[in-house]
Amino acid sequence: MAQPVEPFIKGSLAVGAALAVPAIITSKSAKASSHAAAVKIGHLKDLSGNLAVYGVQKDHAAQLAVSEINAGLTLKGGPVGSGGLGAFGNVAVQPPLMGVGKGDLNYVNDGGGRSKEAVTFTEDDEILVSSEDDGILGRPFELINLDGQSNNNVWQQLTRKLIQGDKVDCLVAGFTSAEREAIRPIVDQFKQLYIYTNQYEGGVADANTFCTGAICEQQVILVVDY
Image (cartoon, rainbow, N blue to C red; front, side):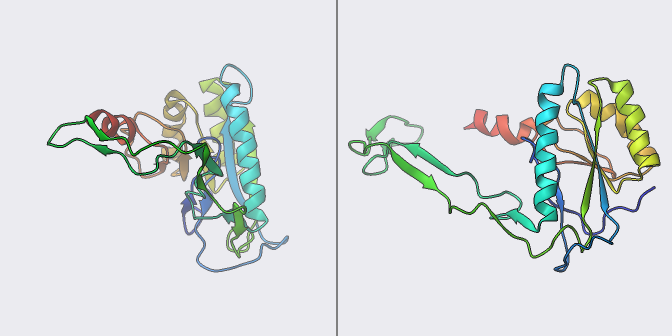
């Protein structure tokens, strides 16, 4: 089994719409050396079959993330990124005032006439900034991309290849929950560091699996309660 990448997760890639590849927290500044052993990331997505419409996008995002990390770049604002390039909208002169008593949601004052459409939120021009660390602790990332072919049996075969054959340091894999559960017994068998980046239904408690996507309790219930 490959040794886990030392420090741990810096932020999630989704990239890949949902992420992409998580970067790794570094404890000191370093420049990646061409002679240093690469940190191997096994990236298993559906590049063909019914789920390729999602997998291809995630694959492209992961390649972009790895190239930026190896070049010593990171998202401005930390793992969550800059939050967007800007948003347009119509702005009231004053904030609206709602309700005069408990539970009353009627408008008391709508804030006055609206302005013309304008930028209501903006960020600096630069989204990427220097991380002062090319790669991870002086080691470049190597992305090993494989196609799960939208077939859970193929997923299991390729997971064994990445762990036993390629000896990846970290496995980033899975779109559907069925894919995740098809490979998780193999991940546990070899005690492989595994990151699942998709939004999912929750309920996974596993020492080797780290789910970085939001679950319904974190999204829907808050809105329903409101």
